[in-house]
Image (cartoon, rainbow, N blue to C red; front, side, top):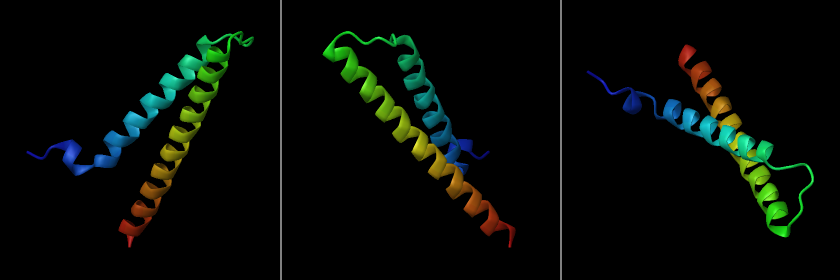
Length: 74
């Protein structure tokens, strides 16, 4: 019996990226709109940057999968 993780490593990677993006979105939503300390400002900035970077990686993974799927249709 084949292991699904070995058959499609991108599927696992996609779910990990989606979970990470959701984590950073949740952390950002917990921060108040009025940030008071330098630490809170830095935290908010880092969460936004990390969430954006993970979202880009997820988008690139989706594009790669679409290209691969089109290539397999031939």
